[in-house]
Image 1 (cartoon, rainbow, N blue to C red):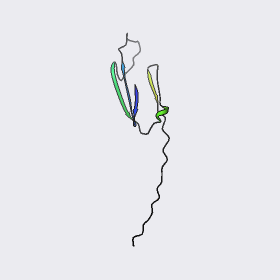
Image 2 (cartoon, one colour):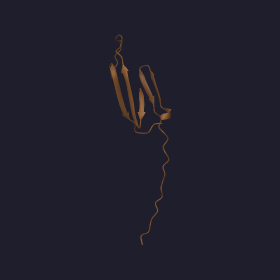
Image 3 (cartoon, rainbow, N blue to C red):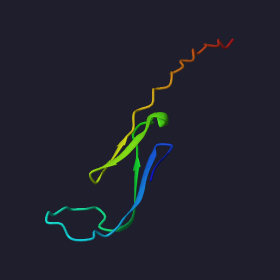
Image 4 (cartoon, rainbow, N blue to C red):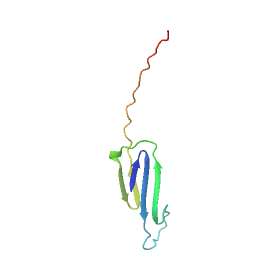
Length: 82
């Protein structure tokens, strides 16, 4: 599962034990069982355009930046003290 709340991305899942050992060596963050990874994003993501896919053992999460909000400049009025 991939969730996004505010700017915190959470990835959770479960990996089952392999049926038989493979000939190649792979280093895995989690060998088997449940896992959870939290990442705080440095920018806001466009939640409507987030995509996640799992292919060849890799989870790919695309998080396009959201459009920056308009910055409103407020003029300051100087008040004369008499």
